[in-house]
Image (cartoon, rainbow, N blue to C red; front, side, top):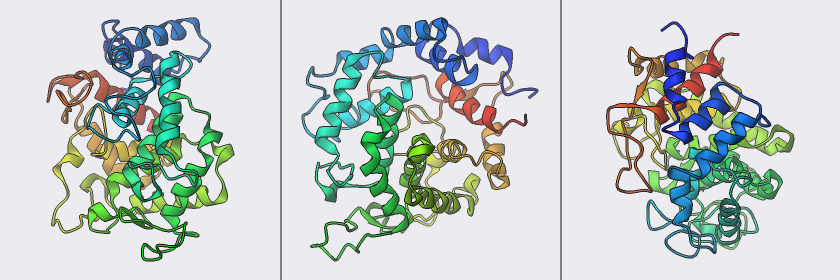
Amino acid sequence: MSSQLDTKVLNWLLEEEHPGVRYLAMRDLLRIPAGDSELKKARRTAHFSGPIFHILEKMDPEGFWQKTGPGYGPKYKSTVWSLLLLAQLGGDVNEDERIKTACEYYLRHAVTTDGQVSYSGKPAGTIDCLQGNMCWSLLTLGVDPSRLSAAFEWMARTVTGDGLAPVTERKNPMRYYAYKCGPDFACGANYKSPCAWGGAKVMLAFGAYPQGLRSPLVTKAIQSGAEFFLNRDIAKADFPNGINDHPSRNWWKFGFPVFYITDILQVVEALVSLGYANDKRLEPALQLIHSKQDKQGRWPLEYVYNGKTWRSYGKLNEPNKWVTLRALRVLQTTMPD
């Protein structure tokens, strides 16, 4: 292809029939300044029509979806998944007060005083995929990053192991737990091996955390996590598989939305957001991303949650605006100046 930002593809993404994609393409690909009147208009339209509007209409006025409490279940329409979906759709606390209400509700019910982001509301309920997804979501939705400092410090410790006792020291308030069981993204759900699905979410969250707030511990965790991914062949999903003898096929299925199942594109999204766009070790993964592009410059939807979450976002294996937007964000960042 001649350019990642081909005019025909951009015009396709900017079509008014999909206001959410249009807004994000204007913001992220055209990089229109936040104060621009046309961008503000597009953002408002995205919030008051289409999937963002639909999801918010399903929210309880108190700030939760489906069920009170920490909001992990039922999948994939409860509070956790609704907030994660809203963040991927471009939701913003400054555009709709209901998003702010939902974020406040989640912070009260699912984030502990020591910073654990929990499926149960208690410290033992922490797990990488959840803490990464929700820290990223809350920041992306517009929560003040300083309010998440304890969560990011805790998350950094879980990566490096600094100051955390092993699972067996049950009386120690700062320790690993059954799921978040060790450093380098070790996870009880992955038979105590490092889980790259969860690790990608943690790295994505670190990428959204402002550099000015990153402590030495957070910086150390970013460096450690980057080496975990970059010292492997990302294109081959060469990550620990627990007791399985081969990687999940889902690694190669680019989807939208992305929940706890992770694809190779999201690993690259995370590393690019952390400044590794020009690292030569990303080349095989970037080539894989390019290989999925059709002759019209579009990417297909290969993994769906249709019928499981709020609304559907395209037909399986057909060219998809949301996936194309994801791919172009990455490729634009890796283009030479």
